[in-house]
Length: 393
Ligand code: APR
Ligand code: PHB
Picture (cartoon, protein in one colour):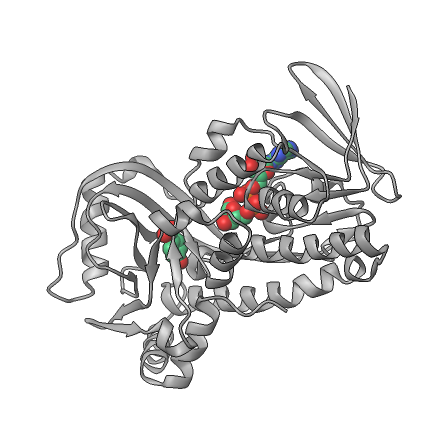
């Protein structure tokens, strides 16, 4: 089958779905092609912390209703080290901003429901997706459904297919410059049927490694601990995970972590990555397809949403006024935010993790940094304004 749309979107993650939703609100037609099934993307466990800017956008565009009901609004976070907890009062330091705990797959469900209710087209289980002719004005996307070949003609392609997608690697050699850093550790994460042990997130620095206490709801806890990059999950029976989390999160305090049945377990690799520019001809990259941040700053989803907000505005101006200026500036506009968020995510990661080749000096320096961040108003404010999300340009 051959069909046509204005914007062909590859990938139904937060970037692709939010883009399709924003374009629809501006009267621009799109088709989303997703390799996985609807059920798979609606159940995939990922991060779950929304910046104030992301929350505002979901509310302003009519997809915030369930988030308002089920999301947990947080006014602060705790940094725990050297036997003590130190609260960073996000709202007080940012003039009232907060963050909201609401799982990424819930955002996905809300966006899919909104697109489908509006008659939007999302093609799930699209196999062998490939992109063509994006060096010119008539790009095409080919894909297969149930063994049948299809071709989608469009004006623009949005590559929202994540880090392992096909769009970025389709750009000819020599066009992109890649910047990256792979960290010498990973996170072992669990989701557990346990009441959160604290009302707020706890980022813990410990001599045995970093640990994070987060949550999904009043009875589901989300926990992470720093582990080796090639860690084998089979070596981590539940009891061992709980004991290690208790040790690191208590950070020398008399503090007890609530335990419960582990319902999901996984390893998250840690890397920083940026591809520049985020455009080639009529192909625009957004979200994880263009950049990855380590999860310590909780920025992956938020950055993906920030990209497509810029892209939707640029496409809207193009279709409404035949003005290409914002499209031409897309990459430059996004990258200014991307690099600031890269810096913040790298900084949080470096401050809170144990690096195998660090010596006693480095550890003292990390503790001094944590002490400074939690005792200086200027430093706390720097953390807070980045954590709740820098303003959109
Ligand atoms: N064809 C079609 N779809 C594809 C292909 C392909 N070849 N390759 C990948 N996809 C789909 C994936 O199945 C996924 O649903 O593209 C989607 C990409 O979504 P995400 O990986 O969620 O990326 P993005 O939308 O940029 O959101 C970034 O998601 O992974 C988290 O930590 C990340 O929070 C960040 C956010
Ligand atoms: C999460 O809840 O999954 C989460 C929260 C904060 C982070 C990373 C992950 O920094």
